[in-house]
Length: 308
Image (cartoon, rainbow, N blue to C red; front, side, top):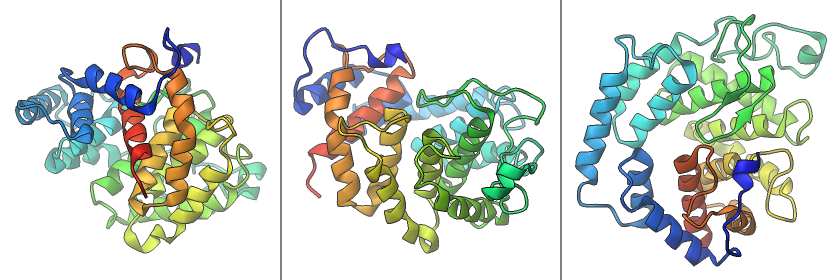
């Protein structure tokens, strides 16, 4: 989108200069992203603990008795991630109680079977455990994820939102639920098709699936080097990923950082020039999901400066 590619009025500087802009951008920001950015920089503000508690209290006040955010799927799933970021596992479990009611309902990515879906083992005969963001007859798209990625195709949107929910469940250590395990196993089966970048699965859907599997239980993490390789092999010469959102992909590479993978680290380093070219003079990267994308960029730039 044009707004995401708006460049700084000055020529792109160095990584250090980009990080400094982001340091200033987040210095006085009283948001979850501000707290996380200052943590990443190793410069927490004196009042960040109190700020985090205030943000959690506001989130509690905003939630309905059923745990949802106005009954909206993506905001509710994202609230679980926000609470985890702020260290509130108990509150996150309450939110996920509502989210789990969406699992295996009509309208989930795995729901229904057509010859193409069956041929790609992407139907209810092969996969299960997916979350339904909306009934099958309800048009969901276009829909934006919290990182600013917009999905316009219905199957890809339903797949990505389910992966966002699965990621919240795995981050919240709920992998002992059989339905969560079914979802993970289903993604492991589907990942065999992801080497064909933007084939049956769109590039951004592949990225969403890889991001969820980055949090898979220890027994199933042997696949992660192969998933990292998919992202590395499909990176273009300019550091971006064809047909995939740059920030969506960098966020996924950050999740794979737990591997300490030299390949993932190199991919992030190759993406740095593309990030620098997109940074505005105020440190941000456009108006879309402004603070979330700035946080993703900051973490990527900091990681690129480390030695692996």
